[in-house]
Image: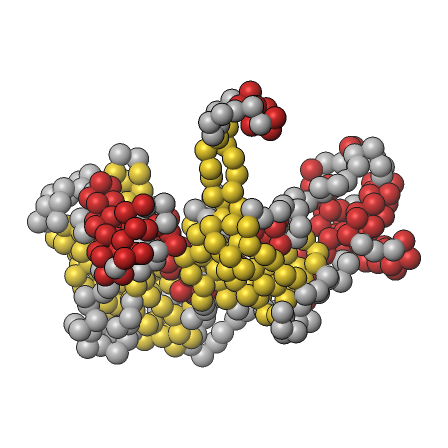
Length: 456
């Protein structure tokens, strides 16, 4: 393992045995069953990743994708079924906050207990005691039994213990949203402090804005398989496709199809035959779900305006198509440069290929880091809740005052809806248009509150 690597994961697999009955579990443990009494569930399937020292890596994915499992294996809470994990550095893990706390002990006793479990001596814990108590900020309650704490006080103390032991590697599983808003702000400040100190950070979060803001790279897991790694923006865009069931399976991704005997057999004889079989499987799957595989954007050749993105991310099930989109200023002039404080209008023209009960039209502004700043849709605005017929076309406009700070932004468009209570994407264009906000007065943050100040 190289010195500049903090965490190395090789061919990691975690398999769980799922039993229909507890009696089957007992029979299997005693070796009494003649046949296999369980179903195999792969929480992780041949996952590989390398994290260098000083990197901040985010892991994203749907529930059940294996995110928490891989963190628990890295921290030693779980053992892998196969594969290996190498760690170079002292870890502090924020997984299940308070795990290991004795509810009968008071806060001080639990600080010593947890510190020693992590591997610190009593003297080392004493040196950190003041920082832990100051961060937890639960006052005299620290001398009371933990069983008398509120849930908020409990997680504050657990977080304070884990965050103040000066680790080389910090591992976090959805733990930055604990406590009240003031404590959350303190947690994020500590997180930023760790980044500035060059510590290695690995964290799982459903807060995609935090992934965009803090991470150098993101890793996307889905059903135990690693779909990819790359910039947070790229992985978040793919993740959004996964969420709506419209991420196409790569045709040469044999690892994710190893459960298919016909593919495995074809691959051993003829790569082209295997590739063809995978393609057939994808087509069958899409036919069964009634959804088509998204194709690469066909609008690339049509783009002549330099403000339009030739590499926009485009997908949908084909029930509708956004055929054009643009912005006009307060003089009704088409533009992509909007003066801060003035009114502007977002336009999109949509054509429908089938009957839809209640389409939803939407737009979103993101900054160049991929963080969603603002946006809305026709359902939220209660502007359009009517059905449309195949062949209908709609001109959609959103008019508002530009209060974003001066700078460059990316504008996305979407047409979605609900089919039998399932959220469905008909057409999406991510990062389709570059919008420049022109300003001679920028305030703090993402947008201007248009304050009026009087001093007497």
